[in-house]
Length: 91
Image (tube, rainbow, N blue to C red; front, side, top):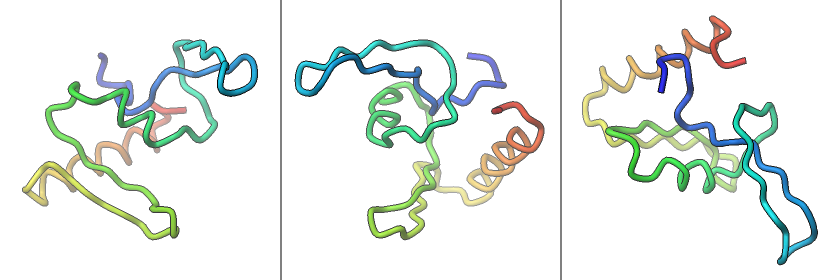
């Protein structure tokens, strides 16, 4: 994986048909649509050395959790994300 890819983004999914018999087709690439958080977490399970999560719970409260104990490292990871977003690496 290159340094310019975001490891938490899964493939684009296309669903054909109606539930429960829907057929899911996984395509490579990035989407501008919101994706299911559980799918993102499941797709990256067992692949990450460390993780920092920022998101909203179902009551729209901001939730932050991290497997990294050192706050400086968490801040560094957040700054790397900010730099890549501002630099257009994730458009």
